[in-house]
Image 1 (cartoon, rainbow, N blue to C red):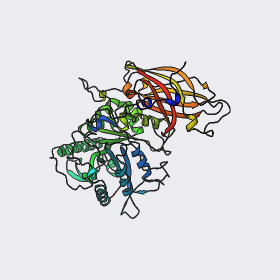
Image 2 (cartoon, helix red, strand yellow):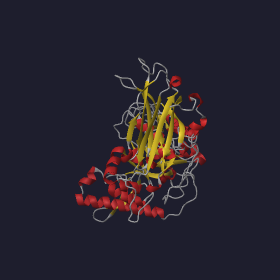
Image 3 (cartoon, rainbow, N blue to C red):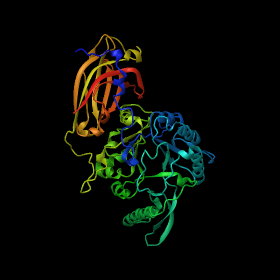
Image 4 (tube, rainbow, N blue to C red):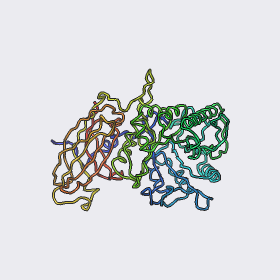
Length: 505
């Protein structure tokens, strides 16, 4: 087989048109209709226990198009300033003001669409007031304020271009609730906060249920009361007024609470473990929740080395903010990077329309439903080139002519997941030629990612890594394309690429 293309003369057109280089999706829908490129503990330089906190990883994330930055806020030892660090660990802190200035400077270096700053707040009221002053002074007109304390619908990315959005739990307030004998009493509870052990011991199991129900009803009434308030004009806000997207966490009564939360528009966080339980037991309730509100999933606490989980599980349930440790490595981070290469890497990818559809009987998309094949992706891999430029001889163990092979597959819903492999090609140079074709039947092509990984065969030891990429199937351009490869961290190689052909039928 002779390919009538000079390897060193692969045209820029082949490379540029692999994915469209401009935003092509509708950006005028509410934020809840988009997958959002989201970071977890965005200030950490390494592991979750003893690494340094810094503005450097924040800057790196923003330059790569990440649109949601997480900061954990803690008081300093003198209780007169605010630090950012992973609390109750040995991580070294960084001052909040330094992180905020970094966000302001680099927020829109890769994308004009809004940056959401999620705050994990462990502060006193006085320090919250200081944070409010800090944020308003640094961000100024970039800061977005909600015109109402109760949103009926989230704004769109288009409306929020070049704006900074603050999302956190509201400060603790005195909430009025009914006691068991019908009298009213006031006590400080944050929304979703459990009763103390002492109070629980004074209630029977039935009374505890009644109290829980009463508390939920009071939250619901409070929410409706806020909704009836008129929108107020701009004013210098206090800490609570800064919060454009109210945040909260759910307890273990997930099914009941997910349905209750349908009455609100806000952001809710679940750990990957709790989300897994929710998706297995009542996945359609999760999908229904994400039609209006934002669901953020974060890594479980035992991921001390800053590893990540499979983001596909979150996306197939409509979760907008699948939070990742951007300093981690591995195939799950590659999938995250691949998804957000879509839509010109702007950090917002429109969810497929089926997530927003509601059937005549209230049905929504069911991630577990077996669906027929909708499209078939045909992929032909011709050859590769560029390793001689990007790799030196210390990176590959040489004892015989290099044998390169490519692993090509799909990440997506369970029915579409697969991985195939080319034959090993022994070549006397750094230019393997495979000329092999693969077909991938897809039931949900809108959520499918094409995974490509090249290795050098290294028997009897572990094969050498030679590059990888992930590409969103729904935005692949048909035809022959030059596909750039990336290193383990997701940095693009200068020269390594594959010559491939794509066809979606």
